[in-house]
Each structure stands twice: as structure tokens, then as C-alpha cells.
Image: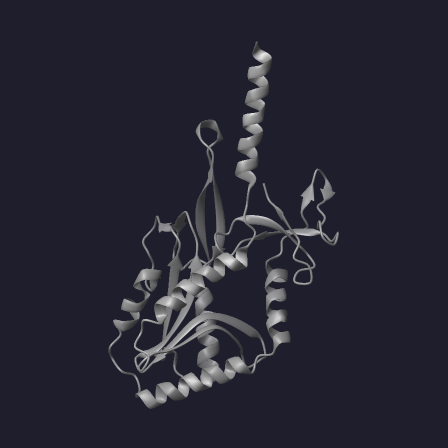
Length: 266
């Protein structure tokens, strides 16, 4: 009598474990959805006063590339926006290099569990973008506003740092700045200059930028039962990576971007 019950319980456990191990590895698509949402909202700004540029790649004076999600240029300042699409609980300190995300991994009862991940402080990350723009445009940094926008259903379990806002607040926040720093003609000139910087970046530089990001953030080769985990597409070593959207782990091919092989991290 107990054998069918034990067998059924084993099947349930296997199904639950399989469910908990499911991971979406489409980091870029989820991250882009957040950027698209912010870009759509920025279209609500008065077009005659605010000039919006999305998904910019520019180089600094040394030729190093940096990617900026959004820049809004107006006579009230330059709003440099870093977009994050996260879920779960966020623990943030504006002075710390890393913030923490806590995710409910799923399950119930004895099977319920949570996962914690660290990610780069987006305020500090965005200052890098501002430094490059200030340097290339030869503008004082007081003209720039550092804005971090969170999309998705993430909630802060610590005090929300200054200049960190929800996507629904991005337009009202920008419009709250009403002290002109220069005239409209100057803002048009700045817009043209930023667009020129963007247009000068080559396709090869963009590809190198993406590749170097993965190299810099790559962990040691993934190992399974003492054996190196291999890419199901090309056979190269796999490395532990984390999705941009929610920082959840997955294994990616070490030959990226030439190979896009991935394996779920259970």
C-alpha cells in the first residue's frame, strides 16, 4: 500500500524541483523591456523643450566605450537615466559598491526557499556615464542629474536612495526641475553634440563592449560532479553569469558573443 504513495510522492518532488529550477535566460530581452517602458514614458515630455536619446553607446577620451540607457536634454539640465528591471526585495545603501536583491525562489512548506544576489550600485554605475558625458561635452557636472529608474515589481526594504524612482514617476520627476541653466538654443546644440558622439561609435566597438562586459563579469568555469560543464552548442566551457533583469544565475558559453549557448542554473 505504501509503494504507490511513495512513488507518487517521488513524482511530486521531482516536478517541484524541476519547477524551481526553471530560469528564463533572456536577460537582454527582459532588460530591454524595462528600457522600452521608460522610453515610452519619456515621450510624454514636451517635445519642444525636452530632447530624448535612448540606448546610447559613446566613448571616453581614451576610446573606452560606455552604454547609457537614456539621456534627456533640456535647458533645465541633462538627465542621465539608468534603468533597472528587477523583482523581489532590494536592500540598498547609496554609499555601498554593491546592493542586495532577495528573491522568493518558489515552493511551499518545506520546499519554500529564497535566494540573495548582489549587483552593482546603479547610482555609482550611472556616475561613470555622467563623467564621460561631462568630459566629452566639456560641460560642468552641475548640469547633470543622476537618475536611476526601477521597473518591475521590486520593492525596497531599506530607505530609497535619493534620485532612485519608479518608472511611473520619471516624467513628473524631470518636470520638477524648473530652474533654467541655459537657453533652448544651447540645449539643441548639446543634443546635436551627444547625437554626434553616438554616431561615431562603430559596430565593432559595440560588439567589443558587450564582449568585454561578459569577460569582466565571468566567474570561474562551471563544474558539475567534478567535470567541467560544456556548452550544448559548441562544447566550450560554461561560466556562471547573472541576468540583468533580476540577477538570477545561469550558465553561459565562454565563447559569447560568438556562441549564445546557455544552461539553466538549478
